[in-house]
Image (cartoon, rainbow, N blue to C red; front, side):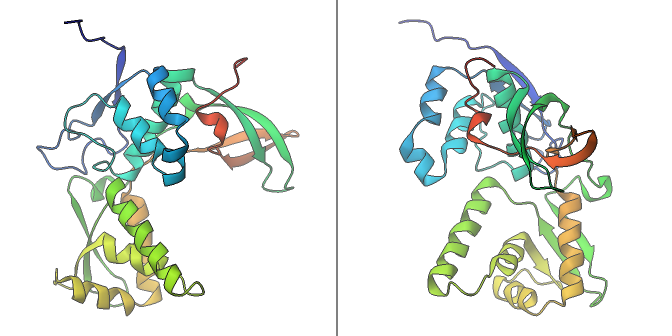
Length: 251
């Protein structure tokens, strides 16, 4: 029997530091082993079927992750984003050339980013260290516990929002749908119908505060960078274009 190929790999730090997973979860160490991309993974990237279904990045990362017991469905979104950037750096290097739009003028220019310069977002350490996070809403003074969403839960939300749009294209339920999935306890109740009613009747200022707390608690990689456009430093978000995983051969 031919010996299995041993691909080079790297241990990748996670923005969450593993604090958002249970103690026995394989991500609790705050690191994941990721192998270097091969031609096999490039086949995944060119699969029209996977692209159409919107799951090509998930399939790619699942093929690259070597840590046992970990899939993209289990990862919180910020950790998944960090692995996507890390996999690109391992495959093609840190330089990424693409068009960006000057937010002040609307002009498109070509710029080369260094993906290795993307830091992890600084998170509120007081909120980390658990699977759930507790806050008290400022207006109603009611307590809420929320969780950070995994890749699987994000897919469920997207499917639910699409279903609502089919029923009524003029009404968006994205905000309330997301909060109903994020909140695991509201005013002492874990009953799903109680939580749904709580969200629907939440005061706007409480909703705004809660969304801010969720953002503060959410680990991620920061894809904003300051670049020089016409002699002026402008902050832009690195766009995820087709060149991200398909740089030109000359790069």
